[in-house]
Image (cartoon, rainbow, N blue to C red; front, side, top):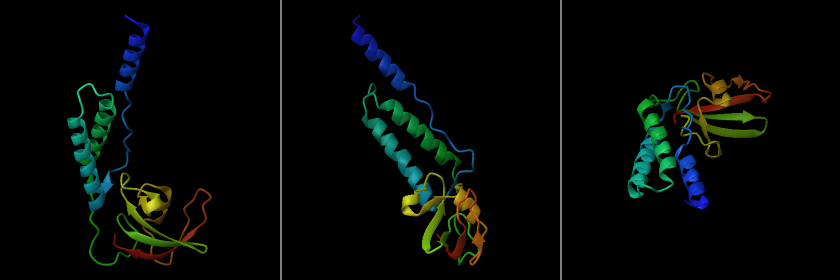
Length: 157
């Protein structure tokens, strides 16, 4: 057996043993959009795996990702915003805050749906945790040396 073959087999074995993706210990709250995104990821990964050959090197990573997303789908707790204008910041709401002259709008969403660049803030983030429960006009101290913010508006998600 050539040395090159042994190295290649060892590399394939290493690639097949991937650590599982970490799963948050927080409840898996999701918005309707977040639930749809999770379900779409499960379908996409199932389709990609089905299209691969049994010995394709990328199978291990895709299978691991599929286990993660199936776990997230199984533990999802759908939270649907109530009718009317919310009186306080909560999961699924959009909140407009002001920090000095800067105004920001955040939609508080589930962990897997979060994308700060798109204004989607995980409900478990320090800022969201500080905002939840606040009302219009309140000054909120996010902590961690961050400057305070003022709640300007709250709207349904």
